[in-house]
Image (cartoon, rainbow, N blue to C red; front, side, top):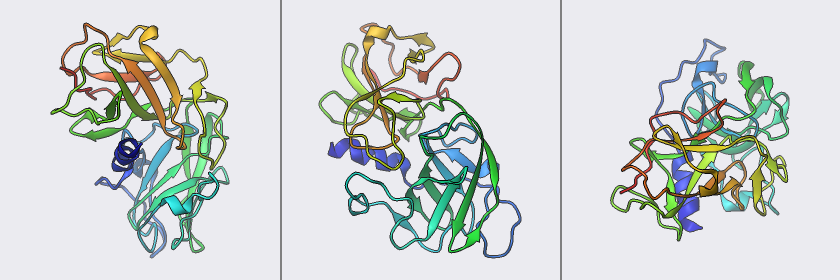
Length: 265
């Protein structure tokens, strides 16, 4: 659990990105549609309910704050962090808050929203940023990365899969993602998942080098207990898997971004 939590927060921590804020009132939060990104893929336009996003810009917050274990009360996550007055509204619903800084804010899109047009607005101490229209998909699959295009995965017993400790054909690994879609039972806004919740049957697949993995190799795909908005895929690697294949997850309608690698030897 320690390793799983660590790799997740490393993936969600600060990333340098050139944002394109709009001209706004001096001192007010400033960001644009192109500076809002899926937090795992770090690309704009890949959004869905129950998906992590990062908002990049200027004047987003007065201080830097990150969620801590103490901020989670009885399994309920905050919509504003202690020491910060930043809130993010999506269709007038507060998003779960994970990180604030003057140039980046990380939130979880409320799972109660539906696919379609949505309006996002960041407000700090009464200073409202621009209202930005987003398009939410039914899913927005993206695998978390550890850098250099390598996806975050753990060996079945917990250690991180790395270039120095790659996975092996036939081994079970756990992959981490966001935006995989609705689950049964459904996610509840601002609440940690307490037990396994599998994806609703929407044709979820895993591809290695563009070839679908047999469904019987996907042992579990759903919410990660103890988190909110974090999905996991328990994958038994095919015995004939290529070395360091490109990996994608999702459905035929919407796959995670290409170019991501699972370290296999």
